[in-house]
Length: 239
Image (tube, rainbow, N blue to C red; front, side, top):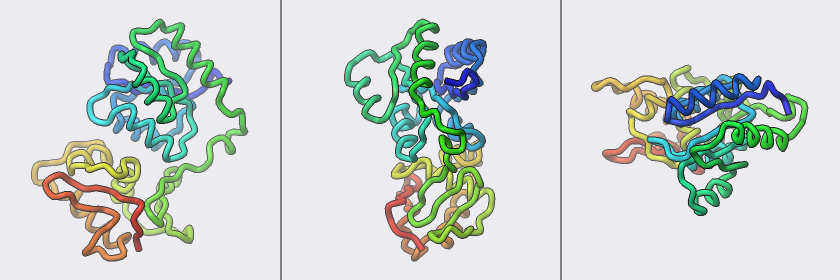
């Protein structure tokens, strides 16, 4: 176990999040905080944690949803779920989605530290390059290279896209099979609210359809859900 392990604390309670960050930081860990799934996604564009402390009940995307998509993307970090809910069903769901441990609030910080160390001890002790393969996300027959921030086709060649299109693609790829409003997409992709008359998200999606869909007039990858937003379906074929 490495005392310099990278830990992300994802909890919508600023006081609790700050307390955990301070305590684990004093124990020699490198700690970063996020208040929700979108903030976690932004953190993970620049670094991959060894362990995530993840609250279950947060506004927007739940901890259950986050752990499920992290595991479906083959992310290998340790995950400890945090919750005020002590019922057995929640615990079983957490482990079923791929959590490594489960801690009920309120908790003693020394117990948290013991569980953190226990999970880190169980993590693979491989060389850094082998333990952290190049991260990527699937987009049908394309792949999004998260470390290189580029889009690759089936042959592994670069597909030309702008930086804003890349950010939008990553937001979709991290939230497959979910209806996302234009406002939510702008927050996930660019970290800012969408202006009242801002049609930039629609314009970029139209451009992505031209580049990735077999038939842009009948999109199967980026679907419009009338009156709600957009749905990303990576299981469907694209050009």
